[in-house]
Length: 314
Figure 1 (tube, rainbow, N blue to C red):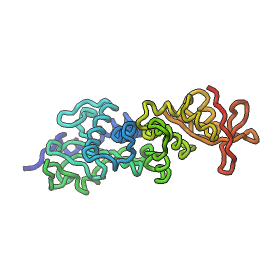
Figure 2: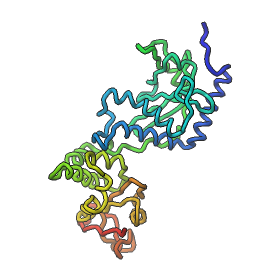
Figure 3: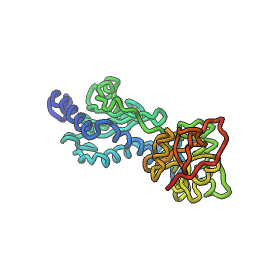
Figure 4: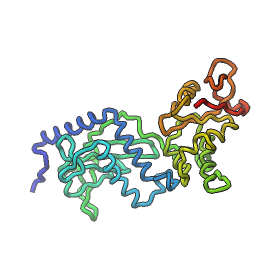
């Protein structure tokens, strides 16, 4: 008996893919919203603030399985899709399911999804990359072999039929701890203070020493400061990294007060809310750099002597 597909004629089904693609591109022209959901979901699953974990390889098998559910839930919340009849979503009045896999072609489709559209999502934290596209689960696109839940994966031809969206997106925000050198990461996570709380503060201080001149993301800070009540507070003044690293010539700049202007004047990336950037500075011999406390300061070179950093006005 021939397979009966939802959506009418082949022409109508082709139009349906185009309609859903157009709606997704209208909601997220650049792909930044989907990329942020994928990045945040990976961070949510790692739960670095409570666990100190920074790599997908550290997750248990059951947690990795849950990634697909979280992606589906978080995209649902981000875009406020309606519920589908037999699928996760209803987009532009068309049923669409959501599938996630760590492998291109690894998505699995149950019997109830045959004939329906799917938004397939792939991501690699190691490569700071993601892809998402639309495909219809149908004969020829699905393998004949089934797992014990009667689910099937796409054939090679099925993968070729995916209509990829947001192909020009630059990728995921990098997992900073994953992409540090092993030596840097060891120095950060093996930093020790005299008490458990001071262990967390010591790790944050070492993070600032290791990753200078780049934006430190909230997730990075919270993962390194795991076990602390408020890791972000430990980056600021009043006994935090900003105060403790000043004798080493390091400025710890955030998103408030004069910090963004100082960061820009030093040709550093300017932090947004929940971000910091660290830089060693020395007095400037000319007008280059940033004016702080009535004097000019520039970024230090490795050959410059260590000079205590100035206090940025607040």
